[in-house]
Length: 171
Image (cartoon, rainbow, N blue to C red):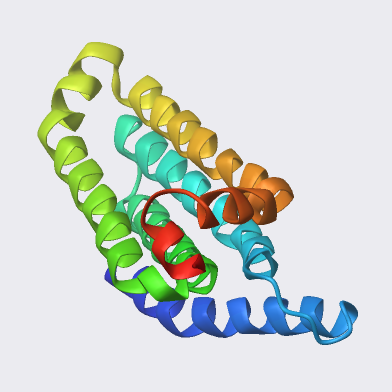
């Protein structure tokens, strides 16, 4: 997991910039925060498949290398996805970047805590392969929300500019 996370820190940050810069140049130099979201493709493929590989290897008691490789893939996927979402949030709301980061990190911390508390019970109730398959389905559900922000992110930012905390910055 650590190795996957370290690779994602270096590779993920650079990938986000490459994708966003290419999309900006195609848009004649006009940059939108949503240009960072296509970088979610790689972590969306690698991360969930890593947790599936890990779960199948553990359930079938295969060699430890398979489970370790799957865990590394999951570490890469979660770290790279987090990098993309953090940069998207900061680009979307630069005046509230600190608050946006706190919210993102709170959600990440709480979900990690809940998963660590209840994963064992989930695995016992559903079986190892089924539980990890369900975890992949949950991950894909949240990943698919990225598509909504890719298509409607601009409209959401325009709406939130006149609502809540952003209202004071738009006056």
